[in-house]
Amino acid sequence: MPARELVNLVVDLHNAPLDYVQGPFEWDVLTRAEHATQGDSGLYAWIDYEFGGTWSSEAFAGKNIVAKKGRRFAGFATYDSAGLRFSWLRGAGAQQGVGIFGPFGVSAEFRGSELGPALLRAALGGLRGAGYPRALIPAVGSEKLIEYYQKHVGAKVVERFDRARWREKKWRTVVLASGQGTNFQAVINGVAAGALPLDIAALVSNNPNAFALQRARGANIPAISLPWKRGTQLRPDYDAQLSEVVRRAQPDLVLLLGWMHLLDDRFIAEFPETINIHPAFLPLAEGANEVVFPDGSSTPAFRGARAVRDALAWGSRWTGATAHRITLHTDRGPVLVRKPLAINAGETEDAVLERLHPIEHQVMREAIMRWVFER
Image (cartoon, rainbow, N blue to C red; front, side):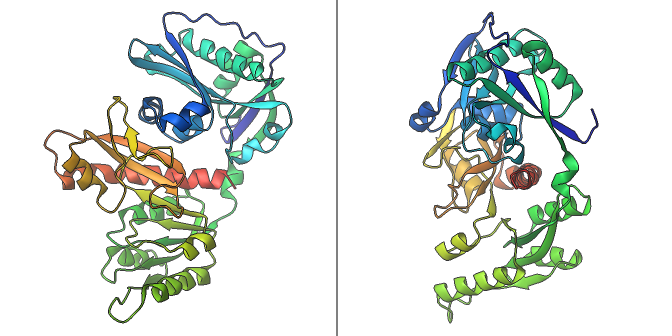
């Protein structure tokens, strides 16, 4: 298949060979109802650690067949997801009687074994048991994977997409930043390299000394310094001024890249397509106050302005980065992408932040592309 192509496949669940042998693994089914009661699970952190990308939040949106070898996760397969907004789910995936399969992953040590086909058949069996006559396997990007699904469950290609379609439009974007602007620079670099289909209309900073302003000027991006004059300006007046500045740029997307000022309800209502990067590994459940890490340990969810410092003070062995949509509740919006980072013994805040920056850049780039794929 062409390198730029993605395909959707459909499986006839009435005729597919869905019998499977469990083998030397422990099996479990994690349902959406359990998500609501548990708030988070080590499964999702393991998915982030093992596979990266958007898979953990996609798995959180569905039911999961989980395989373990002893205490270790060996693989998972998600099925019957709800609420996902990817554009490739709007054709065959939106038809009546079609259930969604995936994501689906097997730990490196078990790839090539019978675990993968067993998980695949078990999840498709879950869809059949839920009453679906057909299953969609979406956004498959390699000939090898197409052949895999054809061989094991008789999947057939029903839709094709050119990856270039998601880069045809340049989405008008405003960036809000208060500090050094390292994440902003990563976005600038991604745009320059053609990796991010954005048109950065302006950089707005509430800190007149922010180095992010210089980064914007160096990239010929309009740089707007908009400090809050606390002694003479009421907070509602400043918030209204900020909204007006952003409104003039007419953005499709707003990025909060180290923005250190709480946005008011009117801003959030007017610019709902806003993504924030936060230097912590946040839980997928918006109401959860704890988060579970890949090793099964848990800590409070470190929200707020000093997340890494708070993690170190608490004694956490982990931190991370999360890109999420904004809501009225600070650092609790739906997670787009997140990635954990282990903290070394005796490591300082500056050392952790130095290692965290590249992870933030990766998470933000992936979150932007997820937002684009959802258009």
